[in-house]
Length: 109
Image (cartoon, rainbow, N blue to C red; front, side, top):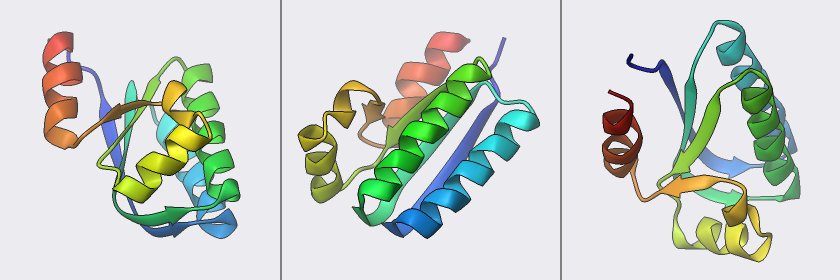
């Protein structure tokens, strides 16, 4: 069975306001049914503490709905933030969408 995947491509700064939007988007996605949410951070320049909180909230929403959440395409600054805050232990990360597709989508077919 092929899983339903929704990709959210974020950009700019993920702060309190953008974090609230992210929470609403993820809740909406899960309400309409999704197995996997991939958050693509390719265009994200910075994430503040509110943004990190929003990502954790999004993870909880997805897990509580029986889905899985992954992140990909982090720049070095965002990657370092994830490491410093230990978020790299919570979120499974992929270098890019291609790596995600190879590891997650092909293993579910």
